[in-house]
Amino acid sequence: GNSVTQMEGPVTLSEEAFLTINCTYTATGYPSLFWYVQYPGEGLQLLLKATKADDKGSNKGFEATYRKETTSFHLEKGSVQVSDSAVYFCALHQGAQKLVFGQGTRLTINP
Amino acid sequence: SQTIHQWPATLVQPVGSPLSLECTVEGTSNPNLYWYRQAAGRGLQLLFYSVGIGQISSEVPQNLSASRPQDRQFILSSKKLLLSDSGFYLCAWRPNRDSGNTIYFGEGSWLTVV
Image (cartoon, rainbow over all chains, first blue to last red; front, side, top):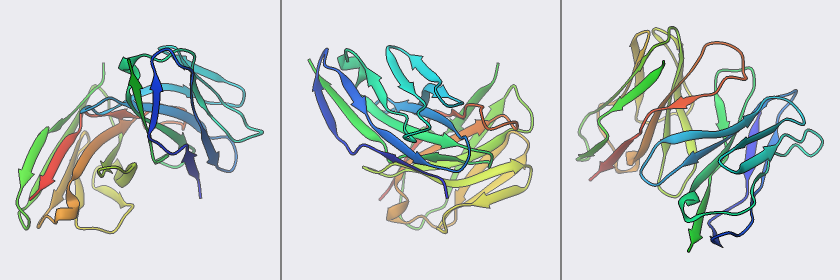
């Protein structure tokens, strides 16, 4: 069945560092891919998405490119801020009614 | 515009007590509805999803149940809570269309079973 594997956390960086959170998936066909973010004490929010190969999703300085050849959707940001501290979830959706999530990666940014 | 609300936001319940978490969606019709749980230190786990009134699919055998008495209402219940039921519960909805649509989450409910 479909699955999503994320880079294990926690990840701790200094402010203004470059961020990459790896995400790879297993699916047949062409799923839609998402990154969700959960700030401390809050519910999940959509961060960005891509619905077909080579699409790039972007929001709030974050980017992720849908790579069919490597079945990946890595999240990147050039310069992180303390306010980016959160848990990030990669997710996949294809055809059926449910969304498949990765295990989440906790990110902490130190000033 | 569409909105989703779930309540209560936090609750502390003793072991063996019942549970009822409620979720409602406004501004849309016939949504797909979901209950997820996030246990401490773990990722999101899909518990139940529903594609219509009275239609419930369970993903994980457990101590919980779900019901959808109305089109935009989704309820998570338990007759007797266990310590392991503690966690963060998220209701979510998605338009009942193709797979490219985003899923939208409620604010979440923190449950502590003591």
